[in-house]
Image 1: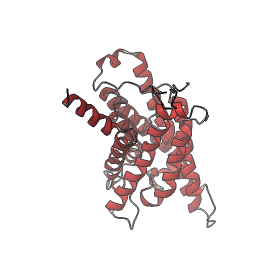
Image 2: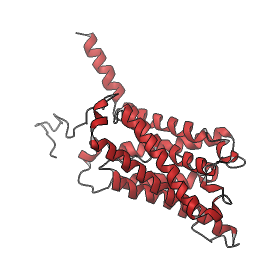
Image 3: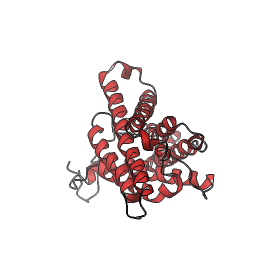
Image 4: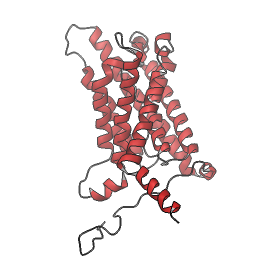
Amino acid sequence: MAKNVNSEGSFTTKDYQDPPPAPLIDPEELTQWSFYRALIAEFIATLLFLYITVLTVIGYKSQSATTSDPCAGVGVLGIAWAFGGMIFVLVYCTAGISGGHINPAVTFGLFLARKVSLIRALMYMVAQCLGAICGVGLVKAFQSAYYHRYDGGANMLSDGYSHGVGLSAEIIGTFVLVYTVFSATDPKRNARDSHVPVLAPLPIGFAVFMVHLATIPITGTGINPARSLGAAVIFNQHKAWKDHWIFWVGPFIGAAIAAFYHQFILRAGAAKALGSFRSSSQV
């Protein structure tokens, strides 16, 4: 899209269009097939995500336990690639249908930024959690011999780390992810960088990959409450539930901070609101 520039070289109008904020509650969504199609897409995507990634985690643990070779199996690097790669693939496949959230924390952040309605946000979270539970259920069905032996791929706070460290790791990790989601899908960036053919799912997948490299030793990397819930429900042991709150509180706080930072700092939402208030008060 061409930019409109006056004779002095300054911009006269925006070269991008911000979508209107989503209504807080939109009952009309419940009558549209596209809404239910999006729910199905979120359910299936999260199911596939948990199936592949948890299976990778259990496979690595089983390979490492049967050999003294430190290079046996895919390693932490391979696990991180599995999570990041699946997010890249699934976001690419579902972005045009549901937005490709596949994560309640991402949905929560987008809801706070008025990108989705409350009804859509809640239903997405339900679909994501159910998909995660079913995905891990498939892993248990296909790998029953190894599933309980290797903790079912559940997120747990590692020995030697305090709750504060674990919570901080989840907050910062989710902030990185949700901040990347906002930046990769920003209409302003898409307009100004339209000559750079970068797929939005690519940086999002890389964000997941990098966060896993950093936080797998601490919490096993949650940054996705549905992923943590699905593994905990199917594994259903005390050690999976003991610190489970970290994998909900941390991601939701991180998502909220990312939404505030992008919308009110980078996109100057706070300054615009203050300017509007000042203009109205002078009338």
